Amino acid sequence: LMLVDDMGYSDMGCFGSEIPTQHIDATAAEGLRLTNFHVAPLCSPSRASLMTGLNPHAAGMGQVAHIDAGFPGYTGELPRNQPSIAEMFRDAGYATMALGKWHLCKNADLSEAGDKHSWPMQRGFEQYYGFLEALTNFHHPHRMYEGNAVITTDQYPDDYYLTDDLTNRAVQMIREVKTANPNKPFFMYYAHGAVHAPLHAKRADIEAHRDRYAAGWDAIREQRLQRQIAAGIVPEGTTLPPRNSEPGEDVQAWDELTDDEKMVFARYMECYAAMMTSIDDSLGAIRDELAAIGQLENTIIIVTSDNGASREGRNSGSMAYYRDGGRVAGQTTDITEALERFDEIGGPTNWPHYPRGWA
Image (tube, rainbow, N blue to C red; front, side):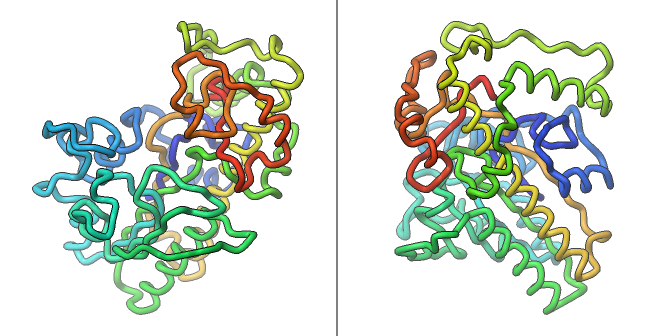
């Protein structure tokens, strides 16, 4: 079960994207594309429903997991009296493994002294490798966990990239379990940090998408719609709604932007597309491992997203997600910083996010 973070409905090739996603597309071609599938519009509520099969409020996640608001539907952690999908698989004899983003326990629990009842290992996973919070730096994660233990890392290699690290560990987990007992089934929950901000990607992947978004969001969204119509995802005659026009949430026509704005906004989206590339490569590596051990045809693969694309970058995007993501709706972010540090965008020294026109 591969969960992507903040991926838009049309961001995969098999759903109309211009981003090449050959491994995701191959998986879709072998199975089904679900076109009327609903999630909650926030990370933790969707994840709680996925883990428990319950409405988010019944699972204690009526909001993003950070605090206990004092009401049963807003506890910020999974309920003790409801089983998780991992607990059910484990009790049925499966090996259970989790990787990546958790985001299902409140801030007060995020320490060595915290209550761990809503951590992965306490909710049915026999192995866990990832981060418990909502997001982290892809080039230098701030706090990674192996099981219940914090991994102390002073410095990561210059070529370190979180998605690759998680994927290597996923392949290792599958290989070790199936080597030790080829007949033991497994359930793997791989929750990507991508494509949530910060828009961090490998430099080669970013360059592979250079100029892909020069035409702008108006042209790209029309092209995606036409591919969706051709693929049968939406019916013939489907038309696009107008660009957002709500006060404080409006989106400018691409042609009205300055040349500098177009250059910066396109680069943000090139980084996003590069992150999608890393997700597709990740699925490809796992499919290759399953094929190598003769289990590809014996494995159900589900790829989905916790919610749609994010408009947290406001109208101008940002080089500093934590600084600008909290701005009031409609407030403009100055692109001077992005112009001055253009070649750094997507690297470890900034936390970028695209403007809401791309969402």
